[in-house]
Length: 204
Image 1 (cartoon, rainbow, N blue to C red):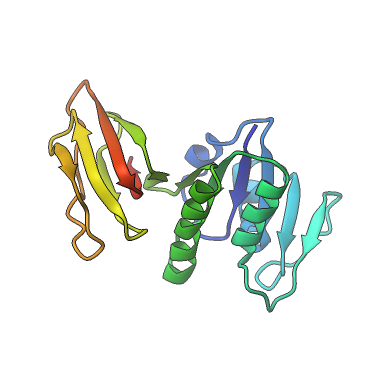
Image 2 (cartoon, one colour):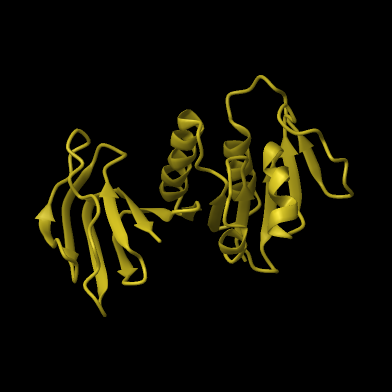
């Protein structure tokens, strides 16, 4: 059982987004994320937000009304609420869009989850994103994958079964060269991060 957080950025491929939601999941709609409820065909387990971009629907569902002026975005509050309720796995939908500040803050949510020992993923129309601090795999069904240093520490990284292998190399924040790698046909690329963390982006 995982917690799915639906945010307000655009979702074009509702079929793909909905495929990440299982019937037993706990689904939180954040404010303007409510615009996606019809497209996803998934009812909320919890609604929360300051309702500055979508009116409160006043459904017979648990609803948390937040103040407009606050430190946490609605998405961050939803993440903290999910952790408080004991969930260990999170998927964020509608978290990447034309507001770069919100997008970057939502990527920061993956770091927050990793820091707290939770598993997190952002899914948009083009990719899956997750933080890796130990090992991960990429199947050849993805067209490309990239490793990005978003926390300042990403050392001794190894990649095997990919077009561009790595052997205990570092990625600096100011030189993001590990972009657009490819899994070898019929293989599963293996990533090992011996020290630090990276953002793994897998493009559909």
